Image (cartoon, rainbow, N blue to C red; front, side):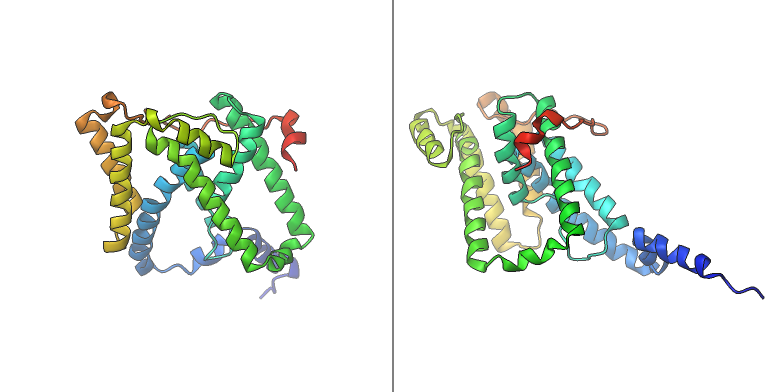
Length: 266
C-alpha cells in the first residue's frame, strides 16, 4: 500500500486555505438547510432595502446598492473565514463615498459616477491589501472610544442632513454642513406637502415596527408600503418624486478612470 507523498497531502490543505468554503461544505448537515434559508431570507429582507438607500446616500444609482448587497456576500461566503463580519455596505462607507464622489464627479452623469466609484473601490482595495501585508490591523486598537463615538455621531448628522431635503421634497445645492442647513431653511417655503406627509408616515411606520414588532423587517415593510401607496394612489402625479424604473439584468461594468487617481488616493 503506497503512502501519500508530502506534496500530495499539502495540496488539499492549500486549496482549503484559499477557498475556506470547501471546509464547511464538506461537513455541512442537511438539517441545517431550513434554518439557514430562514436566516438568509431574513437578512436579505433587511439588507437589500438598506443597501439601496446607501447607494442613494452615496449619489449612485439605486441598482448599485442592490448589486453590492448580493455579490460581496456570495464572494465572502466562498473566500471568507469570519462568521460575524459585516460584508455588505454601511452608512459610513456610503457617506465617505458620497464625500469624495461629490468632489471629483459633482454634477456628472451615471456613467462618470460609476467610473469614479470604480476608481475609488480599486484604490481602497489596494490600500487594504497593503495594510494587510504590513499587519496594520493593530492600528484600529489605538482609536479611542470617544473618537469613535464622535465619528459615528458626525456620520449620523451628515446622513440626516443629506436626506432632509428629500423628506421635504426640495432641491438644494450642497456646499457643506452648515451651508446646507441654511439652504434648507431658506427653501422651506417650497416644501412639497404630499412628499412630507408620505415621509412622516414612513418614518412612523419604521419606528413603530422597530418598537412594537422588532421581529418584523421594518425596512422591507416600509419599502413595500411606499411602493403600494404610489401605485394605488398615484402619488407621483401629486408631486411625490419616485425612483422610477430600475435597470434590470446583470450590472454593467465600469472601468476605473486613472486620471482621477491623484484626486482620490488621499
